[in-house]
Length: 155
Image (cartoon, rainbow, N blue to C red; front, side, top):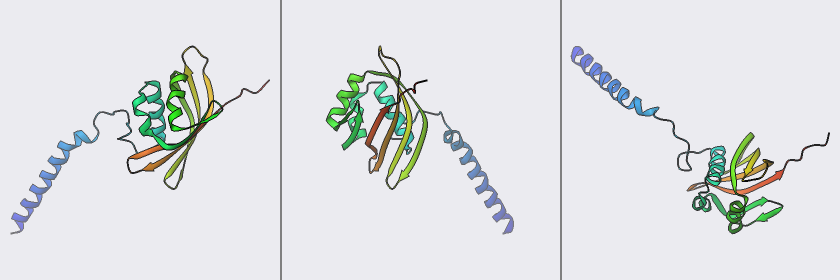
C-alpha cells in the first residue's frame, strides 16, 4: 500500500508541476501600460489622467473626476463642468511628472509632485501640483487638483 501511495503522490506532484509550468508562461506575460481598470495605484491614476489629456480622449475624463471636484488652475477654482473646456483650451501636448510623493489618508491618496506641461506653441510651464484621489467602488476619482506655477528665483 505504501508503494501505491508513493506513486499517487508523485503523480499528483508531477501533475501540479506540469500545470504550474503551463500557466507559468502567462503569469509574466507581456507588460502592458496600466489602465484605469488594471491599476490600484493613485500615482498610476495620475499618470493615466495626464496621458488621457495628452491623447485628447475627452470622453474618458468625466468618469475620472468626482462630481464635486475642486480643480484649481489658472488662478480659478473650476467645477466639474468647467474642467474639460479649460483643459481643451490648454492644448496640452506633453507632460512630465517628477518628485512624486504619495501619502495615504483613509480612503484618499494625496499626491504632491512637480508637473511640466507643454502646450502647442508655448514654452514649457513648470508647476507644483497636488492631487487627491479617493477610492470608490468603481476605482479611483480625482476629488482635488491644484497647480501653482513655479517661479524662477532672481539671481
